[in-house]
Image (tube, rainbow, N blue to C red):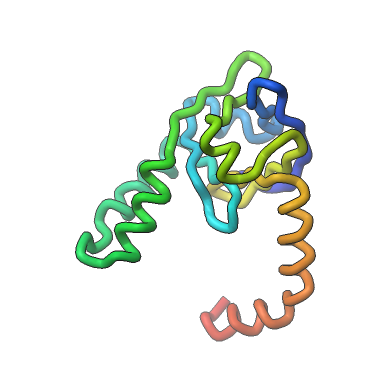
Length: 143
């Protein structure tokens, strides 16, 4: 399980330290890609394979399906942990997520999200402010 919220800094080369408790799960290799809400998603190889199979099975004739597949797959890049437990985030993904120096790494069970710290704080404040409404909608879905 990938759980928790951690703050780390990107170095001048675009490397980001992965929290120690996430390293084992990602040590066999990982995939980083554009996420939603202008963050990055990081998946272990097994989780990525499961997601990619679902994505390529989406209807090709639907423009929303094509757009989402392009967002996730064309933006994806293999990453490996270096000896210090860091990953190199490609420049185009750093630009997409507006990552400069201060970053938040959030574990969301089967994936990791990487956020610019200021964007994360804004998102969290907005979401926490509407948590009752969100809970009601999830209740309608049986959660």
